[in-house]
Image 1 (cartoon, rainbow, N blue to C red):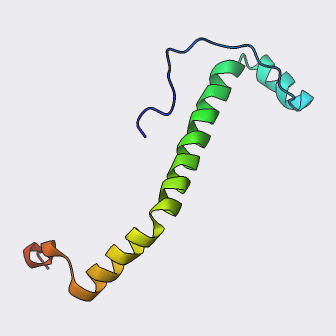
Image 2: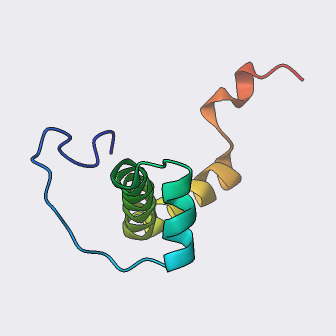
Length: 81
């Protein structure tokens, strides 16, 4: 999940609908809309990938948690209390 997208891919013009006040304020602050959208999309994609992975591996994660609760962890013998 380290590379969510191909950063060398060509840019593509896209039409979006944005709240007019939000757009006006962003332009007044010289915010790069394209860069901001790309950063937001990367964050959303990472989150979506994470949620999909957790859902896909829910049973395995639960089984490992149950196993460690029942038997403890291998590292428990090396812990300093």
